[in-house]
Length: 275
Ligand code: SF4
Ligand code: SF4
Image 1 (tube, protein in one colour):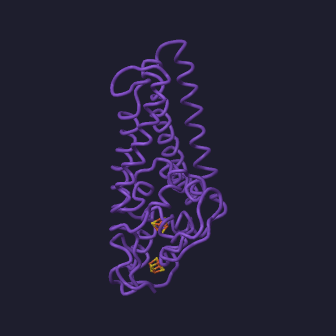
Image 2: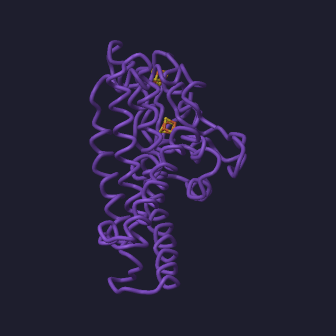
Image 3: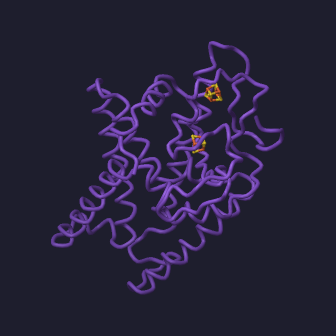
C-alpha cells in the first residue's frame, strides 16, 4: 500500500507541483463538486427513490440501480476519454490527494495544518453525502435520532480519513472495483496521457516519480504485471492510468526553463511511434 513515509521521491515532486497554481486543480474543483452533488442529490435522500419515500429494501434497490447507472455512464465517458473519472471525479482519489499534501510538506507546519483541515473537511462532506442516503437532514437535530446520525457521520468520516492516510493510492492500484472494471474497458481513448519525444523532455524522471500508481508515463503502451490485489496482469499500463494529470503537471513545471512545449500532455495518445 502507498504510504507517505515510503515515497520521499514522489513527495519531492508533489511539493514542486503544488508550489504553483495549475489549471487542473481548478478543473478538479469543479468536477469534484459535481461528484459530491450527484451523490447528494441523485443518490441521496433518506430512503428516497425517484423523489418518493420508500422502505429500506426499496432504498437499497435504488442505490443498486444508481450504482449500475454509474457504471454505464462512466463506460460511455471511458470510450472517448478513458479513466477521466478516476483522475477528476472520484472523491476517494481526492482524499488521497489531500493526504499527499500533508506528507509533501514535512517541515511546513502551516501547510500541514491546512492539509489536515482540507482532508477532514472533505472527508466529512463525503461521509455526510453517504449518511444522507439513509437518513433525513432532520435526524441531525432531533433527539434521539441525532445521536445515531452524528455517530454514523463521525464513524464514516473517521474511516475515510484512515483510508486516505493508510491505503491511499494503493486502493486505486490494487483494490478498487471500479478501477478493476475500468482497467478492462479502457481501450483506445481519444484523450489520454501522451508522451511526445519530439517535444521537450529533459529526462528528469519526474513524471514517473510523481505517478501515484507507479507507472512510467513515457511507456504507457507497455504491458505491465499486476501490482497485486484485484488488478489484472498483461494489460497496457495505459489501462491502469488514472488520467490524473500529475505527470503532465510535473512535466510542465520541470521543462519550463528548458523552453519548448513539454513532452507530456493530455491529447490523443498513440498517434505517433513511441520512444
Ligand atoms: S517529466 Fe517531462 S521532462 Fe521529465 S522525464 Fe518526464 S517527460 Fe521528460
Ligand atoms: S501516468 Fe500520469 S496521468 Fe496516469 S496515473 Fe500516472 S501520473 Fe496520473
